[in-house]
Image (cartoon, rainbow, N blue to C red; front, top):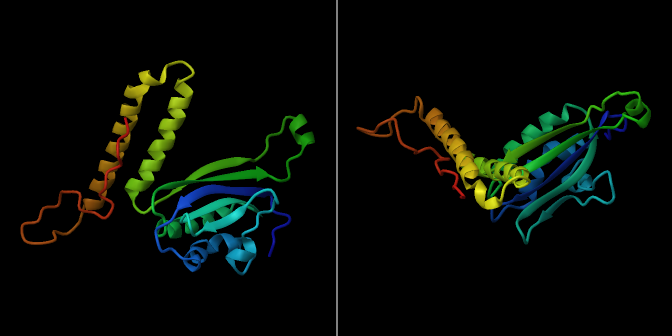
Length: 210
């Protein structure tokens, strides 16, 4: 049922490129944690946002894209629905993508602000993708964008190649650590097979863009 007295207005925002052949039915199942949380019986029934000027949840079959600009009333337990949704979207995503989640304190008013109180607003960024490399790639790209945007106030863009290269090194080490952790304890696949190598399912290394 609708959560009219919920303490937060929660905004979900992101575009997720989908694999070829993904159907509306698959998407409805993947997004079930969201529309059930909203008290609906189908995705279509919950797709409209709480605000008329927001497009809500849209499936662009031609562009193979899931677009979300959707607000719902909720509480902290909405984070559990988000975790379930991300796990399901990983199976449908073509590339890595970011989803921005904003929690706005619906009970906070101007009088409280004047008195020096702080709203309980919160913000988090979630990532989905077909494998760890795709997720790390979009994390890397967003970090580079943020760092370059900040440093361009003081330096020319051409001077920041070394900074980008260091960010790439950090993500390469993180990816290598992930590969090694997945390989630990893996049984050899045949006579003479070693335990090393990058043979796990997510073995594609994120590309380095200098």
